[in-house]
Length: 362
Image 1: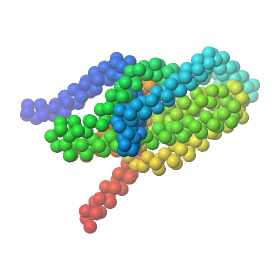
Image 2: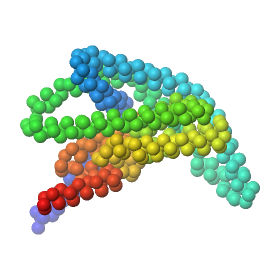
Image 3: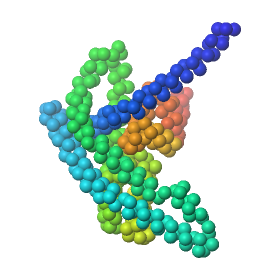
Image 4: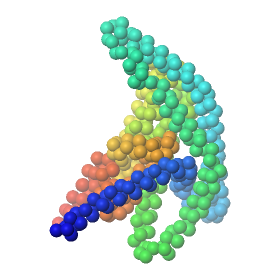
């Protein structure tokens, strides 16, 4: 009897122990966010840079020269982004109180118009519960977080260099260290290839989204089109929710600067770009197995944003997607990956299983 009770307690004890370990690890990551965020950003940049590095090596370029070319391109892009963020963000932050006051006045005028026609919304309570300037503050906070991360450019650059240097020799070390190298390296290569493919495709789709947004805002005449294009590029890594967060401050600015018609055109541009690229082009290019459910996207945005701040919000989906790909690489953990994925992926996985059962029966 006692043995049966002890056996039943074991799963609960393991669950509590796992929960306690998770809390300790998360608290440690949050406490060390100042050093972890630059390292994560370095790993993210190195993953993107690995493809051009390997392409240069396949073309016969020596490894040191290939790394120098890639790092020089990264530094050039980083300086350009840093200059853009620094100059545009300073001016935007200076004008932010004016935009917020204008927005409150516009909302107050709208509420007065509703009261004139006999609809009492309760202006004071609504203004206290909902501050429209928070949308501007959120956009400013995200870009400020990126600017702060770029100030660690020296550390990030050297970390990227060492990661790229290690990438060419790591498979040899892994082969020598593992007991069953063929099987383990197969799962490791599958994991790395899927992560690189996901980040590369997502980066290209984000860049295409940003270019279209910049051109559209420039045609309409909205201030800071390059800044809003950069925000659209960064938040495009967050599916569904990111495009809404990126569009809100831009539409509000267009409303204050140019009027309701231009604000409507701005929102329409974001909607069309998100529908065409986010819902049509990107899923076809990505293929199955590289999607997340909307609930997981939202929870990852909240969780990683709480742990690492604004940069955690920007990297939330890539981080969660990396975990999902790692779970999908193993047979015993693939079911967790399916639970994290989208409904279309679950249906595709179920269809594949039915096809396999039919093949076995035949």
